[in-house]
Image (cartoon, rainbow, N blue to C red; front, side, top):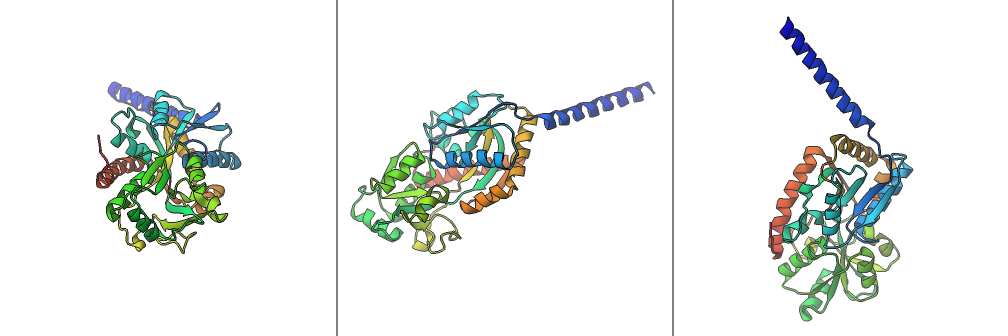
Length: 327
């Protein structure tokens, strides 16, 4: 009987402890301003997305504290990732990741932080890309651009982000498939990349519909190829790269949220729950549709598996593109 009573006491204690743990998770709510770290400067894709999410979270009344976007450009995502890693255990800081947070450490020996060192929260969307030129450009399609690049090797210019960004990797893959060469010019912010295209200083840009939408609608940009499996619903007259005879691997672009390392489980559960509710909000679903995103919500073990699979996939694509892989 004594042993039975002892075991009953232990079981009750475990149940109470578990209940307290659940309660603690339910009780966490941000009590001060939230830092939302992005690796781009103002006007970049991550910057635009983070600011839109901050605004929509307030609109949907899902969060009571202000979310302040903090721009940490430099070294691709390296500065932002290091900043997030240094915030170990910080419960009021999150970061908005893209695929470059996976690819950059694969090619940069100096990179000290990988996504494995951070805390996964959610994947929100998958994002397509297009190839755009100025509206008055002589290039009506990719064939025109490729022929011009063959006639004048390394004379045409493409604006983009870091050398491990999707912008540059797509350039390397297209060049390898077509036997062409043109120059890649890296700019720290999306605004600079776009303004150099509009100003005629570069001739082409790989860009997300979210960044290009306003300029496309205003008639300032012409989209000459869609970097997707199927034509985009908003651009039904724009053929895919494959339709234009260039059959290369497509590079996935995922966007989502990470937290610093060492964040308590109840905080992770709070952010997971918040963004899961947000993913179902009408204003967010409208934003996703308008910007040609694809809903890609993941959390927990499926998100961890996504990062593992993406790392393998991007390592293969980097090698295919001729980039040096260091890890």
